[in-house]
Length: 442
Image (cartoon, rainbow, N blue to C red; front, side, top):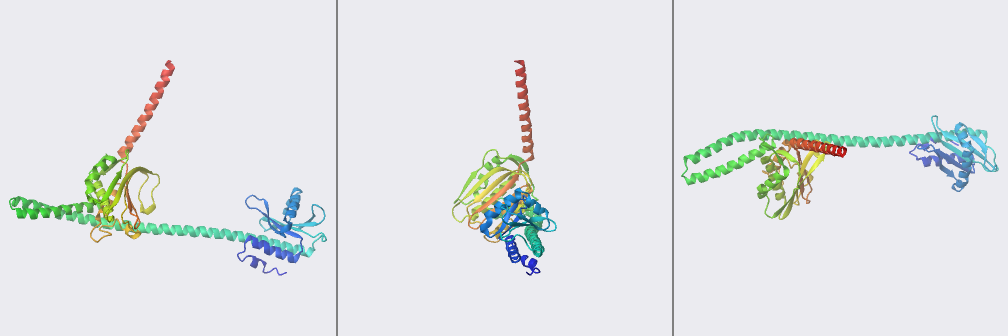
């Protein structure tokens, strides 16, 4: 029997079952047991579990014998020994050999070998070799266990590394997008202010021309054409300032239901007459603090984009609800803080956008149709962000687009709710006190 290559052989990514088989073969070469078995310690509950029995047909007989040995305390005695012990069987017709399976640090199980009836002892020389085989078996099982632990830990660490790498890439992309948006916003704000200054001079000279030639219809006709263009440029300047988050806001507190009732008729002209617009705005939505003109610009820009995405006939659905966000949003570069919000959703059944197009939706002058348009959604981003909210866009090619606008509940409304809640509590306490007083008087 060659023992030198034992550990090398059973360490070749063997499973526990393969180690049992290899150990059993070596024991067969050493001693001819009628039945041999390994009872291993369950690491979860410390019970002895039959893990290997050869031949399989003797399993029932072996288990009956082991029950007898356990009841007599002989298994416990064998586990306490560091050498093999030979004891008589239950029927006293044969000998049973017991040997602990252990490393230097812990017990892993016990070997049970039933000798044939014709053989009553094991040669002394075989005792030492059998002990080495079982010690090697215990060490191999330990190695497999630790290897599995290392593999599992490696998998966990690799997964954590992959997740951290993914988060770093997302963070880097977010930082790049923020820098890009800030740079463009700064440029847009600067251009808008310079444009406004120049436009003021244009508008002033237009008014002077009208005053200088009030009777000249030809001049007045051209002046009116220039004035219409100037008004369009003034509107474009507002959008640039909104995107740059530098527009002048006339903020007021208003119930969102009231805003939608007034705003939708005013902006519905931007939608194609072949597109049906349905609005589902429930009662009881939060109050918001906002510049209504800027918010109306937001609604018009989103509806215009939705209408353009619908080729012929289609439908735009507008709905809103109160929501509570309990944790900071970290998905899709979202910057919403916990609190109460109104979520306004504008959903169309148009052509939709692929992932690349969707990622550029808030870039100024980006469009899916042709260059030179698309400032509207950039202005939407600036306005809503400056109102403490957030805009998200979900879309897929051929499946339409869903724009969600989150607007925070106004602080005044929160204070009012808290006051009402306190008043209701005080009223309830007062009523309870009155009932107790009436009860005592009776």
